[in-house]
Length: 457
Image (cartoon, rainbow, N blue to C red; front, side, top):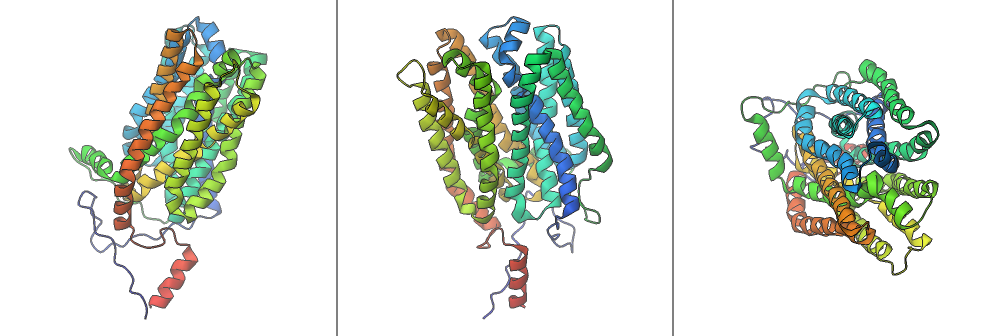
């Protein structure tokens, strides 16, 4: 006996109602043009991460250039992350209402402006202002690329596209570590930072000429409701979904340790506390990024086919980070063994691929016209945790006379807080997700859907 096809899920009273008589649009087909468009967008994200992490290889140079200590030095990434985190919900709303193309153009323009300003900044204050502008532009990239991927590729490929986007970002981080550090050492501050900014202009040209928000002939998705109070209701509706909050705490927990290590404190820890040469320390930071690149595709493949693996992946990566981080920084000898430092860099490489799981939780908890807003809420989690942890580490280093053991231990507190929230929200989020997507196979392959339809008929 054939199984009747399930009816469409009940409408959420907080979601904008579709036009009468409309049907849900079919998945976009993907294809070469989709890959070409997505590649342009992801190149913007590559530039954003390259410029965002450029200070990670120049922390000691910045301290000398502007004559500042650890607390003042930590203000650079903290301000950048503060702006980034504060912009996430506004940017999510902008992406939902204006589309990815406009947001990416504005974001890349701000990135170039901020990096050029930082290259030529004569004082500490002007350099801070430049990093704030850069943080604002950086905030506009990732969410816009995620939404563009959802518009050009089938839904069952969403976890893989998120991982590939993250890989592009990690490639930007790798370029910063390998290339920018050497340019900084051999050619100086202005050449390194101004040259990386001008590289963004190469991406701006195809962005203006070729990027489009959706495939040709495909009707735009319904825009969120307009009118007074509509934005507040849109944000509130996304926040009330347990899956959105679960995604935020997943991002909070998994991204924080790697960001603290890569953005600022990894290089000083390895050089000043562990006695490594700067070149060797840079290679160890590269190992973190390389591990992220290697893990991204397997994570995406697994999560596209087994959505039930999301929580085990997050908890496994988190447990490994806590265990190795604690052992490495509290090793009883003066220096941590080299094999343990390498292991620390390897497990930190799992943080970024695991953090993208948060966006999948939020995507399935919200309708398409709220995806940007929900993703913005998720993205706030990791960058807020990173910002607070960076500040706390800097303050503790100043207070303890550069005791990295005590200072870096504060990161564990953020991770443990996040784990408790993940465990509390996961059950409710999964039940709600099953209500919205009751099909036993959440991401069936297109051929499977077609065969099912034939049998039902």
